Image 1: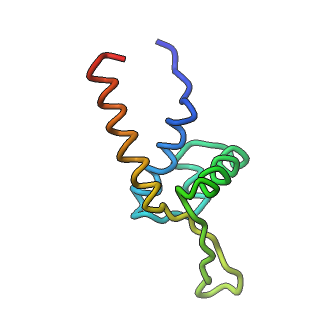
Image 2: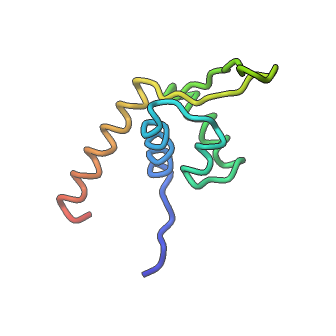
Image 3: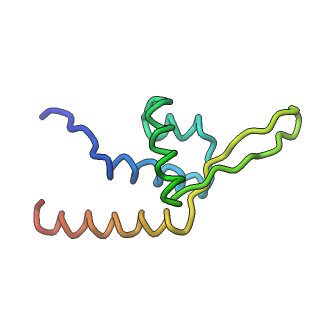
Length: 97
């Protein structure tokens, strides 16, 4: 069996799920590894998810360093997407699709 490529919706689901699994907030670098995407591809998806209000990026003041870092936070709309995507997946699986 050949490895199938993830669809755009599956990639979005994986990104949002990775954020949810980390308590709803994650550093962009960690998200890149968890979702198995290149830096460029992750940024493209994040731009779209921010635009669609599924996630937001927040600046975090570093405690020891003088520069701030970023964290990606899933929104209520993002959590709703995860829930509906799971329902859709269960529905299609029930019909063997």
